Image 1 (spheres, rainbow, N blue to C red):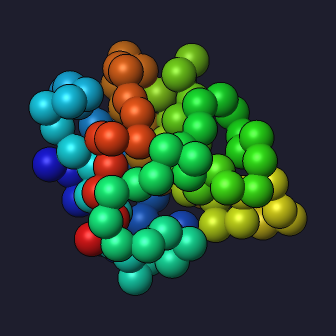
Image 2 (cartoon, rainbow, N blue to C red; image 1 turned 120 degrees about the horizontal axis):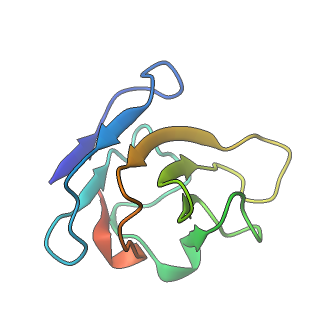
Length: 100
């Protein structure tokens, strides 16, 4: 389990070196990731690519470089925050996240 529970964007960028989809989980603190509700991350809130593709995208995973970003307003004016990098850009899906 990888827990992200420190204020953004002041935390720097964490590196996850050994993530295994389906075995590991990324936990996001609901008080910090305020655009997300506690519980499983709904699939429409997860996107792959370098930026949000629609207004629902909150967690964006760039499969080319492993960058993991949080975007509080999807395609709105606010910028996405790069908070972690997954080494080797492993497979990742909404099912790998839990908002706590």
